[in-house]
Image (tube, rainbow, N blue to C red):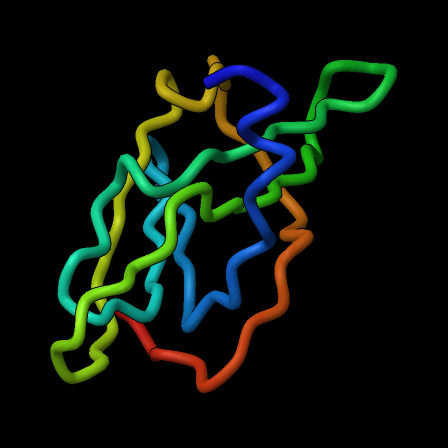
Length: 102
């Protein structure tokens, strides 16, 4: 997605997240139409390019559906994020009403 489109988005309020060996699981609010394509993950590796990285989850397309709000899971792989090894991360987003995951 072009940078100008990313700039139109906003940091998503996360309901929870989980970092696994191969995936980043996000829990976000949906009004019935939220999909993975609604998000861009910015990965900032800083000057060193090594862990920890800063992740920013940006919603680039709002969910304007009218269904009852619920929390949905969105999964990104390390390869989709451009991260080739195990990593530690900080999250730039606010996290509210946390969903506990095993």
